[in-house]
Length: 263
Image (cartoon, rainbow, N blue to C red; front, side):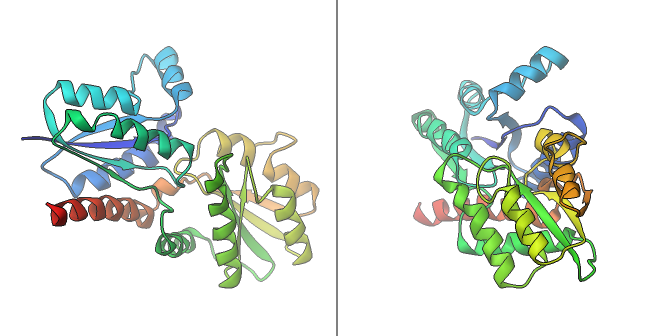
């Protein structure tokens, strides 16, 4: 029986960060399934179009990838999402997978990074592993993407857990709560002198480069500096973190084991 491993992420148009983050995760997961052929899909049609127009590179979306696998005779397919939260992008993957179930003997989908209480604690451990040594008046601020989906609450939950564990780090989101203004207010109340900015995203792409680290007037670096707080950006996506990579491996393994036990 032909077996496939399909890794699905939002995607990125930055070749270097793709290699450091997406490819790194793909390879780590593929090592756990040497009997399967590895395939890739992106959920962002905007990025797929950009890569096609700019570089002549074709990347399938999940639906296209599943159709290709079915046409090629694969009958046992496992999918791992590299999304951070159970939001719109992951729901897109899950819905499209369900619509192709009748074309495979077995089709299973691993959940995103933050899918259980234990995941939050594991991610906090991973975040701490990449944080620099901090002086008493320094903090790390992690920039999440945010979402209009109700799963945006994951960012606030993660931030609250960091606070209750007295970890010198905060979480903000570009497109939802916690907003950067509320993050700055908290930093000011604690008389923070310097902040290290890190992406809470799989890749250090457009949001990290432009919204977090650039000299644009509304970037987080500039807004912090205007508030009298020194800001040092770090362009390192979560996909570079070995502990995060292992979380994805474990999520997929849990789905595979559940299916085997039920068989």
